[in-house]
Structure formats: C-alpha cells, structure tokens
Figure 1 (spheres, rainbow, N blue to C red):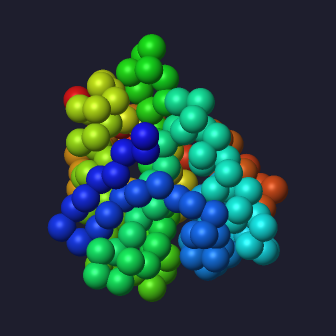
Figure 2: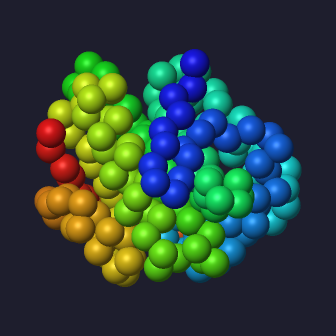
Length: 174
C-alpha cells in the first residue's frame, strides 16, 4: 500500500504512468535539472522509465517517491521523496523537484515538512540527509528553513552534463 500524505494545499501520492506527460514537462526543463544530477529529459518515454524506477525502488523498499499534486487543480507539479533508504541504519536522503511555474509559492516547504514527519514517525528514521549542488541556493535555503545543518562538501560527487560537481551534504536528525 503506497502512503498518501495530505497537507493544506497538496496531496502527496503515488506516481502513475498516466503522470508521464506532467513529469516530462518538469524534468525536460534545464532550469529544473541543472542541479538534479541528470540531463533534461528529451521524450515522454524517459519519464515513463523514471516512473517505473520509482515503483520498483518502492517495491524493493529502497526508496519512496511521491507525486506532488495540487489539491485545487489536481495537477502534478513535481515529485519528492526518500532514496538511499537504509532501514538498518535508520537513514535516508531526500530529493525533490517542482515545475518552475510553481516556484516561490511555498509548495516545496509544505511537501518537505510532510515527508520529514513521515520519515521520522512512519519510517522510524533517525537521520535525513540531502545532497545539494553548491550553486543551488534555493534548495539550500529550503533545507536550512526546515532545520537541516550543513555537514561538509562532497568533492566531485555529482555529474551534470558530464562534468563533476562538488556538493554540500546537509542533514536533519530526529
């Protein structure tokens, strides 16, 4: 059973193949993927592959990725979730993206608060980590606002367009 989380304005829910076009519209934008660690999508089939990988990872209990749906419009505006989940060590890393048309409206803050609560209570996590490109100030601000602490720099940790990038490691403890 996939967990559904509700906030004031959002419904965090399972992502289905029928969401492929909306996911493509988000992940095909360079301004979204430039700090994502993957190249922009070029076609809807790639979005379908990502959705299949989200489902497989959830089934194998390695990750959970929610679609971020606006309650008022039922539009999928992005995704958020945990990856690198290690139940034995009670930790996971958070990742997210939102379509640029919805930036600056507080949706990311609302969604991350919901999954942090879920992670600490339902998944019994002790630590939630976040890996962020040094240049991604919007994401850094979001994490700091939620109480994440910068731990250090991971050198040449992520590749974007074939180029290695340093990243910050942030964490939030229960």
